[in-house]
Image 1 (cartoon, rainbow, N blue to C red):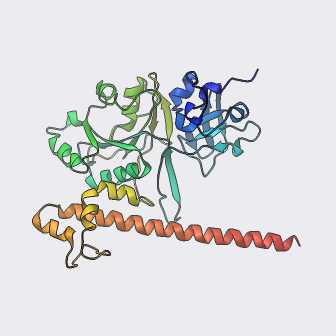
Image 2 (tube, helix red, strand yellow; image 1 turned 90 degrees about the vertical axis):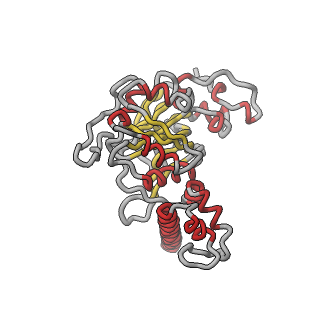
Image 3 (spheres, rainbow, N blue to C red; image 1 turned 180 degrees about the vertical axis):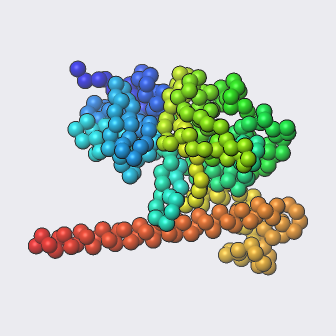
Length: 358
């Protein structure tokens, strides 16, 4: 007998108020945003599943009575929701995303790497040691803001630091809209301090360098040792890669947690809005410069330079803003050029095939 999927639909789409969704789907993060995109008929034929692991060889998907690996797809990442086509899994429909965190892929390929989809909160993890880097935190926060994800800075290893207050002060200065928490990842603090964001039906992600405690935090929330951990090097506080792939862990209390490998190179692309939000003070000032194309270097009537001279803005912060804006513009333009070339090449191939068939 076919499964009754009416409970998964959203009343917002003009349907009757449904019962609670399947407990597993709720733990996986099923929300009205996804339910309103589909109909009962679609659900019966193609049940919803979530991508919980990404490997080169395939994608692990979970759903109501479903746990399987399907072929990899370039357009799909961990956290995505699919309507599973049992006969041809590679043709499963990808549902519209609530959020998408992405970066420019490492190397010279001029492509985008999808990091995670449908995340509600991004815990940006750094340590109270040599790993702490304001510029890197700004990059992660820009990614989160641009994706429409709530960023929260977590300062780990605070228990091993004589005085964590300077780290807290520098982190809080990045943005008034980002909460900053200190915690001991190996204690009971993660469960209590992160509880406001780790609610049933929510999906959270730990982002940051290797060795900052992302996997330890995942284990602390789940109460298991499902995520492998490893100590950092004592000489430079750098970590080793213990998480080899992105994986969504389901917590007993109904929250989904994404553990990610450490990122060595975080290049922004198509993140103009996110950068502007991180540097909202500078972005607002730049709008009052005399010239609309002001580069804030030596132009007369530059409101940003005036703020630097008066001490209202830190010059180092201005330098980081310039760098991120330039980087994002360059990478965005490079990707646009590649897309244009790929589109032109696709047309050429299509025309060649059409000509050959005559």
